[in-house]
Amino acid sequence: MENQRNVCEIDFLAVSENEALARMVVAAMLMPLNPTVDELADIKTAVSEAVTNAIIHGYNQNAVGMVHMRCELDGKLVTIVVSDHGVGIENIEQAMEPLYTSKPELERSGMGFSFMEAFMETLSVESAPGKGTVVKMTKQICLPEPDGQVPEE
Amino acid sequence: MKAEQFEVDGKTMTIRLGEDLDHHNAVYIREMADCYIEKYPIDRVVFDFGGVKFMDSSGIGVIMGRYKQMSYVGGKVFVRGIGKSVDRIFQMSGLYKLVTRLDAAEEA
Ligand SMILES: Nc1ncnc2c1ncn2[C@@H]1O[C@H](COP(=O)(O)OP(=O)(O)OP(=O)(O)O)[C@@H](O)[C@H]1O
Ligand SMILES: [Mg+2]
Image (cartoon, rainbow over all chains, first blue to last red; front, side):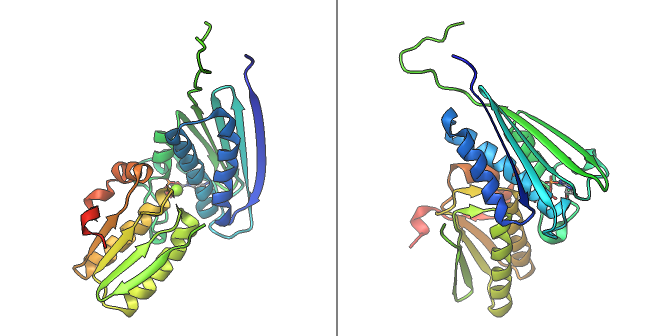
């Protein structure tokens, strides 16, 4: 069987209503892969973290900028890219440390990047102050074998 | 989607959470909770997770924020009805150290 491939890209305004929208888009795209409940929860959480960061940190909750999300399926491999043209991150290493947050007054816990790392297989962050941030994450979904068929190798 | 419900009974505030505990809903929950805590002498906050299907790091902030407020007044935070996916977030973030779990027997 050939590798199934699919790509979906959306741009949405940096408002918190769109956090649920982003999760739903990704969940709908994953449907044909029959992900397990855990796999789906992992990916939805990671997407939610990245999108929330773009809204809260990237655009400082100003609801002016646009968030871009790209979801690509290539066989079992899911690749998600979330990017913004917001303030950017000065020190990426520090930002990715567990419990580090630049906005404690907003009741942030500094766990966002830790969850993205834990729930996905790879995570990369590119950012430049004043330019914006690109977060790329990948994860393999375990495809169930069709009934009664032995995988050919 | 089901919305959050707030109930104050004496010094206890129960927050029945909706389906999604994300940033969008966290902002609303925080505002409402602050409002009630200011108005009533609350020293017990109970989060009912029975209806929650999704939670991310924003939910951690909601729980931790109420934990801090309750610590100031010598109060406590309780949780109940936690499902599998929320349990994972609680474990990973160490939230169980701050809250007390109410089991099914204590409900009703
Ligand atoms: N898109 C972004 N633009 C600018 N800064 C960002 C962006 N994403 C993350 N950051 C920075 O990285 C820090 C850590 O992010 P992380 O998601 O781990 O924690 P948080 O968002 O502060 O808290 P939490 O996600 O637990 O609510 C943020 O506090 C912020 O300073
Ligand atoms: Mg975050």
